Length: 136
Image 1 (cartoon, rainbow, N blue to C red):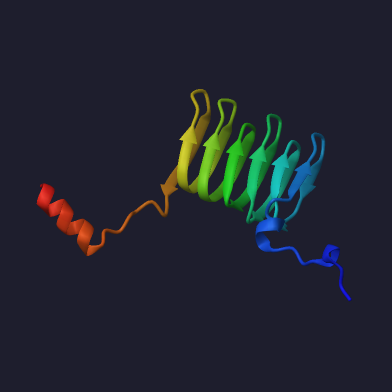
Image 2: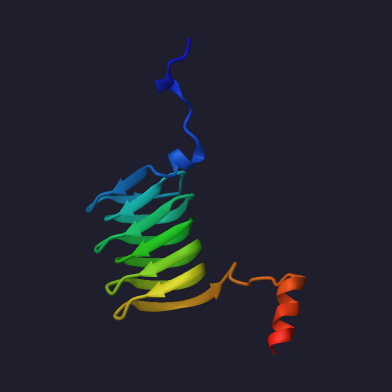
């Protein structure tokens, strides 16, 4: 009765979808999405996505952003939570509060933010602890 084309998308398929905010576009308000974003325009508000957010040169997010990964070449001002890796290219300007799993900053990037690293503590199991004690 149902064809294969009516298949429901899984979360991994949906997160591959890309939303694009073109240059000259200004969005004011909250955005919740499953797919990633490429921001070439301006977003003023809160953005939450399970995907990756790319802010291109000329792009701006002013507000709160929560995402899986981020790659900034443009401007961000506000509260930023990146669950995995935040990459700042040489033209990036970030101001505000940042929480990230990993942070990569190219020379020339401006990073005027308080920063907290999360999820990077590795717990040692008993075998690792014994091995460490033997080598010490």
